[in-house]
Image 1 (cartoon, helix red, strand yellow):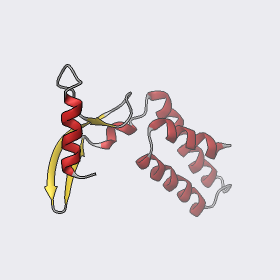
Image 2 (image 1 turned 180 degrees about the vertical axis):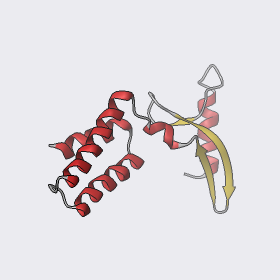
Image 3 (image 1 turned 90 degrees about the vertical axis):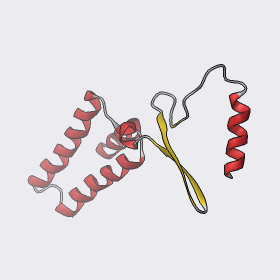
Length: 114
């Protein structure tokens, strides 16, 4: 989408909103705010507040994730899981956590535990 089209759409939207609404990205239950707009030819960039906030786990989810990692390490320590497999499982979890929201991470852990 071109910059001019974004501006047109925002101007049209502005006419229907009775207040100065914040521009965000993400889910309605955990949006990330627009913090910077800059142009670096040939692109215009919209930068949103760090995605790290999107991945914060609540205490129960944190316990589940920690337990899963502990389980993988324990299985390695007991010789039930080769080191390369244990590191691959943890690396995959880290990879998934960078591209997913907390509920998707937890779903991935539950699937891996089955």
